[in-house]
Amino acid sequence: MDTNAPTPLRPEELSADLIEGVNVCGPDDTDIGTIAHLHGQGSTAQVIIDVGGFLGLGAKHIALPLASVNFLRDYGGKIHATTEVTKDQLEELPEHSH
Image (tube, rainbow, N blue to C red; front, side, top):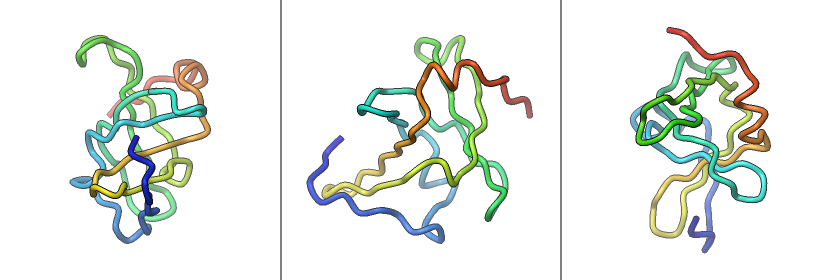
């Protein structure tokens, strides 16, 4: 992640179009998955993260509260997401179904 002057995104800036496909990093900047889509709005919104798999195959869809994910825009304008949840913790959660 380009950490040169990252700027946190405000809640009103977050939209499905902006965050879908964004890579999510866990503690110690480890790659834990990719945001597949956004469910809901406001305080009940959830991000659905694809965890595991290879090239999109075999990935497990996990729902996390939107508030548990931090979104940053780096100096070049690219969006990044971080969370304190580890990949192992995500893989232990039940799979999200539509």
